[in-house]
Image (cartoon, rainbow, N blue to C red; front, side, top):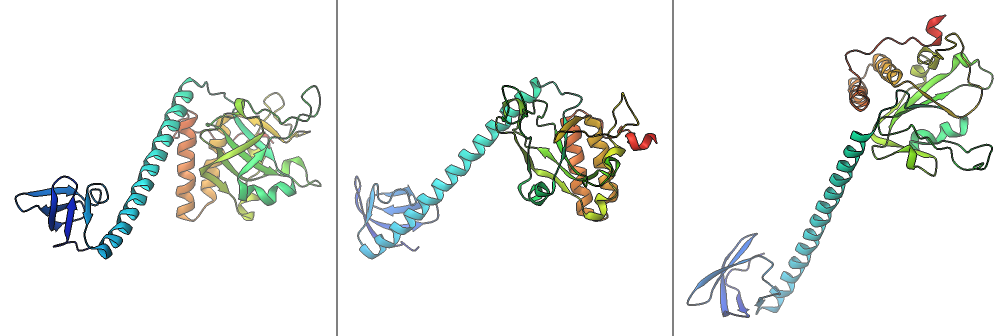
Length: 280
């Protein structure tokens, strides 16, 4: 907006003429002296344009400038809050003792399979008996270092046919001991869904083993169970080996690196799977 040679009135210095301006400052000649002011902040507070049409146009500029500044301040405030939450999370993680079995494998029914890869969250189910009957199960071991493994098995299929559909890291601010609704949300950056062809090659019991009964492959009841942290690292490595698309490979590699960092696992020293099916 060109304001050169426009006449103004200043509350203190009186009449003047605009001789120069840019995006940040405006220069005004008050006959006996030249002064600079912040643009467009000085207008409306100290300086008034004599030309009403120009003043009307400038008012729109000032309103737009205020909106942009307000949006910028809101953005800075959101970043500040995010930084504060991240620091709180780090401090809590420093005090958190990582359980050796803080991963969750979840058995999805057909209805759940239709929504899981849209919502990217699971429900822990409800307590079946006792004084807390009907309340959501408390997944106390699930923390920001945890992954949720998603599996399926047809009702007419053997348990050894249980397949891995995908997995996700838990949201970085989620702590199971304070979760009351039983909903376990995902991290926005670490989610994997396998194709139908890949699913057939990812059998759950290649990784999971009951150490007291190494040849037993049973899942009698319940929607979920906990399992060893290292098994998720093994699963991620095998998922990466299935992929041919470089972007998918890099995505899983980032997932694996994050998972290992969160669980204090040496990414270069991940053992080979030795689940129940490997014992046959």
